[in-house]
Amino acid sequence: MPTLDIDHMDRRILEWLQKEPGINAAELGERIGLSQSACWRRIQRLREGGVIRDQPVKIDREKVGLNTMVFAHVKLTSHGRSNLAAFSDTVSHYPEVLDCYLLLGNVDFLLRIVTADIKAYEQFFFEKLSQLPGIQEVNSSIVLSDIKHTTVLPI
Image (cartoon, rainbow, N blue to C red; front, side):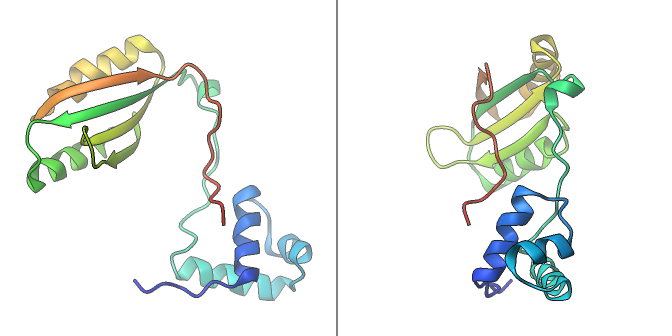
């Protein structure tokens, strides 16, 4: 997909949409000095160009009972493409896995996992994660507290 030309005004729109995802085109246009219709057209262009993928609702995980966050470093026994693809495909279907990154280095994947508590993570680990074929090693790091978590990109 070709890169979309993004000017200064587009960047200002993106900054505001990241900070206030629910802001409407009229209010946004007023803040950055554009008419509502011009602002709306730019937002639509950014959506159609794939720059704006979605505008998620942010939920406090602890308020919905997901009190434990774990970063799992996963090393596979073999690095063939089929092993990487099979692992990626399988973990992408686990709702507990929020993020999965393929890494270059001493481990193959980094997973961010949320569960209700340590016991629930233990169950997830023994019944799902450790049962996947080709896993050599999993090192889990339990998050004590969130210091900074953002989806806002420094545009």
